[in-house]
Amino acid sequence: MALQVKETKAQRLEREARLKTAAANFHYSSAVTEGRLEAHEVFWRENYSWLKDCGYLLRPRYAPGWTAPWLTDKSKHMLDFEESARPTAADVMDATRVADGSYVALKRCNLAEPSSFVGVLPESQIYQKFSSEPLASDPKNHCVRHIEILRVPEENSEELLIVMPFLYVWDDFSFATIGEAVDFFSQVFEGLQFMHNNHVWHGDCKYDSIMMDAAPILTGIPIPHPWNPSRTRDYSRRLQREARSRTQHPVKYYWADFDLSGVHDPSTGPPLVFPGYGGTREVPEWAFPDQRCDPFAVDVWCLGFMIREHFTEGFGLLDEKKMEGFEFIHELVADMCQDDPAKRPTMDVVVERFSRIRAGLSLWKLRSRFVQSYKRPVAMQIIRSAMHWAQQLYYIARHLPAIPTPKD
Image 1: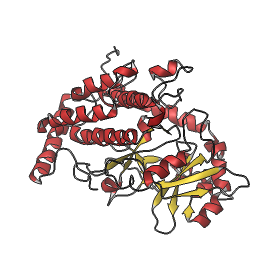
Image 2: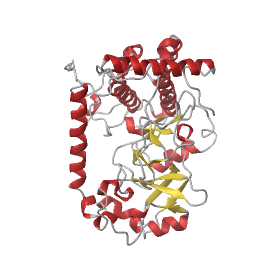
Image 3: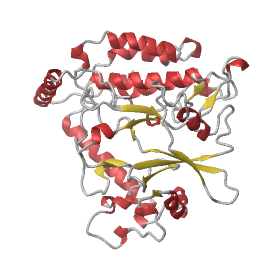
Image 4: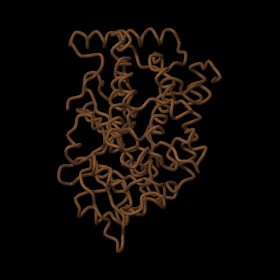
């Protein structure tokens, strides 16, 4: 049972300040201070010109001959320069498609040997499978579609770049209501069910493997930076609460990051493979690396664990990310996280059970605020609650559903 700690506003602000200081100290000790690229960034500088010839322009940081502006311009802190921003993943880069100015993501992967784990396919094959008809146009398909796949031109290279639309992690912009989170659950459950029904396991169902097409809620406002959504893309100013409501502008969620995914042939019997290792290390099966396990059951556990950490229970000493009002999904999540894989529901069962749960939720519940469960000053609660319900009355008057419905 998590230790319950009551945190005052002053304590919370002090904690957040410490975290910001720690983050700044991390940056100070990095290559950014010295104005040089990290080792994993050199690849992008070396291929800058080739990618430009292919129609994709990287940010100035990766141009040949780039020098860090903060080494000579002392008018502002180095972290206030756009060129200090680096990708949070070593194998993913953002770029601009020259033809139309749209933003894309470039994912490095290997053509021949994507992983040492048995059963895992090259990531490019997974993208091609779900980006090809008839699967591509299936409304239940929530897998990121690729735009094209480029072969790195180095001699004897087996490396590919998968070009995809640039998407944001699902929680880069906060939900406003429980109904918006319910839509998120519905799409994510349906997307993983679709993969499983097509005999593909994901293999790494953690929170940042779920992406969001944020275009509907970003239309008409400054575009956020791909690696720092709190700043504009050119770093000219900070963005705070500028994204539009999902209730007014429904969004779509997508599964991505298929480097540990695999395909099962049902004719070969039960789907049993040796465990792989993704970002969620607590999976019960992974305590026994020499024993085969069902990768589909592992997916179910990992997705349940993600919901448990980010919605129902939170994590850390202060139950960070624990949200109010999600008791309706506790039992389902608990079943998804059973230690015994045989006791976990399949994704077909998860989708069916959640459909019934969703149908039983009241409009009051669905339109309630999406808010963390730590204590707040009463006056603040009253003011924010009044503003929230005034907004909800406006949505009701416009006949906007409590659970957003994205357009196909």
